[in-house]
Amino acid sequence: MWCSGYSNAPMRIYLSGPMGAGKSTVGQALAEKTGRPFVDLDACIEARAGQSVRELFRERGESFFRRLERQEARRVVDEGASDAVVALGGGTVTSEETRRLLLGDGVLVTLTSAVETLSARVAEDEGRPLLAGGDAQEVLAALLRGRGVAYAECHGAVATDAGDVDSVVERVLAIVAAAPIPVPLGQRTYRVEVGAGVRRGLGECAVSAARGRILLVTDEAVMDPWGTEARRSLEATGRAVTSVVLSPGEAFKNLQAVEQIWDAALGAGLDRDSLVVAVGGGVVGDLAGFAAATLMRGVAFGQVPTTLLSMVDASVGGKTGFDRPEGKNLVGAFHQPSFVLCDVETLSTLPAADRIAGLAEVAKSAWIAGEGEVAALEADAAALVAGDPEATERAIRMAVTLKASVVAQDEREGGARRLLNLGHTVGHAFETAAGYGAMRHGDAVARGMIAAFRVARALGVGSEADEARGSALLTALGLPTDVAGRGTDEVQKLLFADKKRIGDVVRFVAPGAPGEVEVVPAPITRIMGIVASF
Ligand SMILES: NC(=O)c1ccc[n+]([C@@H]2O[C@H](COP(=O)([O-])OP(=O)(O)OC[C@H]3O[C@@H](n4cnc5c(N)ncnc54)[C@H](O)[C@@H]3O)[C@@H](O)[C@H]2O)c1
Image 1 (tube, rainbow, N blue to C red):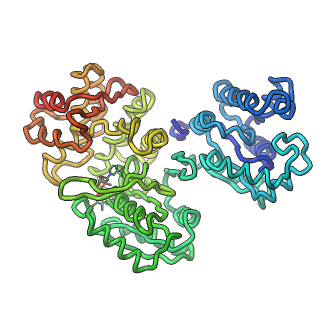
Image 2: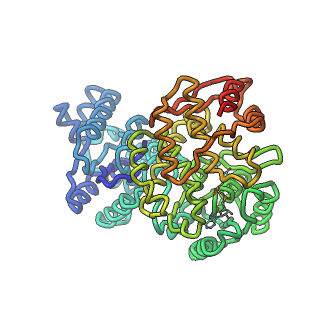
Image 3: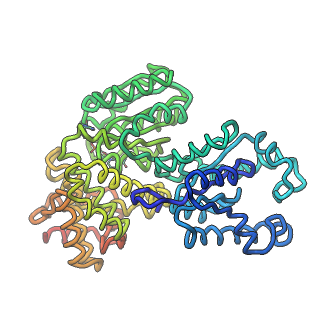
């Protein structure tokens, strides 16, 4: 899992980037300023191998060096000081395995500079094996192109061209303090910021996401104060801003709402350089995301989720779409946002019952993530029900961290992402059977999780004790767990109609103990029979 900062322990800081970007200089200054130990990965490799990097390249070749580098990075993670500042080699993060390891272990910051700056800095340095015999600018330009993905997957990037070392150190420390959660998807990598007041960074995020006009999409219930405030921050960037205010709620998650957004965008002259910003719950996010995916075949998109459900689930992962009379979310597209700002302060206007319903997705995420996450949630349950902002921030970070790691492995739900459906197969059937608006989605997911524990046991996964613990957690979070009598004929029919069914088989997400959640293929008729017995 990616580093999330939901524990308070100091995290390692990794500095990546091309040669000449200033990793060692900035790293040493950062270590000195913060009293942390400094580690230079190349120096560690040289000490262990008894040869310089240049000699290793010349005598053993680059792939041998890269192997040593992977081993040394692993050693830092396993045995290094937990608060170290680590200057990586320029190519360390080209290994996907190492990159993901470091992203999960600490805060990974990429230092960048223009090719001209880099080549001027390394011109006199003879210890750079990759520059041997070549034109420095050409070699560096090719390196930057080849390593684009590796350098993009990070917690934040800082340009070192102009700023003095102290100001670069300050910017790295700001990234460490914010501890954003990266969703590492190569060049489409984005970061989820979580905390009180992070919405105030909206203007800055918008400016770095796109160069052109901005379309703000919100709904009537969110407009004041959050939509109005967002509009002010966006206008302060000097960009042209147009707003669309939708009717609130699932009943309006339809094609007409999408058309409203399309029309406003086209009327305002949005072009391919434009940005769509969603400020609202999951409905606004899904609609605005779909409009952004389709306008000019795809424009940039940013999310400021304002419900707990949209913070912990809907705003991250790139699923967008709208409902049809035949069912929910039947038309949609994958379109990843460029940024997500989860500001816990926006939850202050959300009715408590809606906030608490969002905790069902948090419980689901913790159960998928593992024992540590479930134990932390058990300890925080009362504070979460009361709406404590710090506990809420920890819960959001945990859930987003889990989702980011699952989406990074499986962006389009071909495998690991299916785990996130825990509690949803039967939960959706309960929700639909109850009739529109009669059962909150979160309440349905909570009951669906209890159903999942029972179905899992019948399929040979988990124990009664697992269900008892899951049930106690959901109850402590203020969520319903009663499923008796709910396996009606209608619920069974709805299960049969599940759009995720392939032939006669569903891939049922079966929970055991925390962290032991499996996808078990099972005949739908079997699941229907088990649910009928509730
Ligand atoms: N894309 C995904 O991966 C994904 C994942 C889960 C859910 N979803 C979708 O999310 C939707 C549900 O999201 P939701 O629960 O956020 O519902 P929602 O967007 O309908 O918001 C619920 C209600 O709260 C209001 N509201 C929102 N923020 C508020 C605030 N801060 N203060 C006061 N009122 C506020 C809204 O106007 C709305 O009336 C569903 O359509 C679901 O399909 C999408």
